[in-house]
Length: 482
Image 1 (cartoon, rainbow, N blue to C red):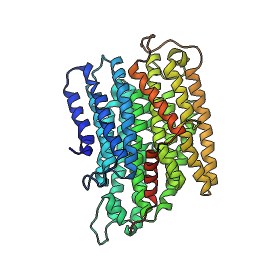
Image 2 (image 1 turned 180 degrees about the horizontal axis):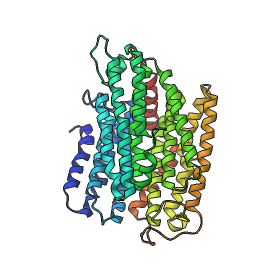
Image 3 (image 1 turned 90 degrees about the horizontal axis):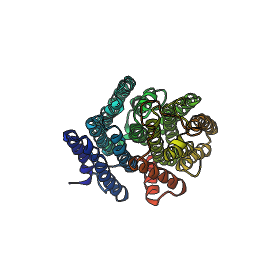
Image 4 (image 1 turned 90 degrees about the vertical axis):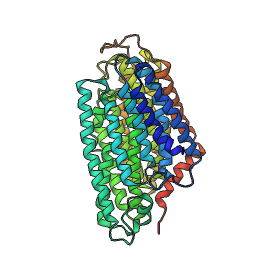
């Protein structure tokens, strides 16, 4: 069986198996099994990319070759964490949770492999359905409210994306070739697409997939979903799902660039990026709930990704590098936040103080994660954010660069006051019925250590293979199609 098929089918097979297995104890071990197999095959394809696509519908393009290993790596580390997390919640059935996680991995893989925009839309819609049970796992009124908000808002967004896909198909009509939604055909025939229909399609697709990505002002599901879901689920949403949505927007922008409409599309990406950063900066100030703070931080970094993509040039490279940096750093922050929340039984500054004393590992790494995500050296996000800033100034967008720095500063101060409030001071007693003796286990601690080491590595050295894949994805936007 081809590795591509295994990547898509094997997680689904494990999802079915996890639903059938009666043991609540052993079911969770299927998650790291699926994660290690998926990661091994993803890294093989990352290092030795296939020369030809598997089928006209399935195959990795340049940006997908970068996204898939990042998603797979994050899922693998989260799957290790999940074993310890589910042990702490052994009183609940984890059948739906494990099945949903594995199905989610399969659907994220399908987004990466989809060479047809209709198939990509189906895969992204499937990620919504597979993640909804994960958000609801806490089984309380707030979690069900967050789940419904997530489903409703993302469903509206994905409906707009479907309409945009129809508009894009209509833009191909009138050509000598047949109407097609295959990426290869759209790129080849891009110069002949109807410009008005292409413009309308891009706006709808940007709003639709931007809702899934969490760009402002379509981000309103994020604070509730991230705030009420477990840290494990928040890590997968902020570090995995957003990469898939960004990949969809990247492909639509790729078509616009090939059609000679890169300037038109780029202006909207820059606008959405700045609006997202501004919105995040406003709501992060004086934020008392540190998980909602991380949600607004995610909105900010989705804006950074959009801004870098719209600026072009070296900023595109920075945006693609930041895609991986953000995924790993958000994974670290949400997993550490999950440990802290479980230990204290709360997620606000009124309930949580002195996390470094209570949980030395999670508290320390939560602080280091804050330093990393706010673009401080020597961590990876500093490099990628600096490249985006450099690109803005190099292309003469001085006002964009100035606003970018201003919003980064405001977010740094806002997050700093919240994070320092969490980690400093005298440790408080738990308030939610959790054991006051709770400590991290190897399952919930080792993934955090690996994440901080990877984030540090990307700040000090970018491996040659990773650099090559980023360059390939960035250069594909500059190709011309006759």
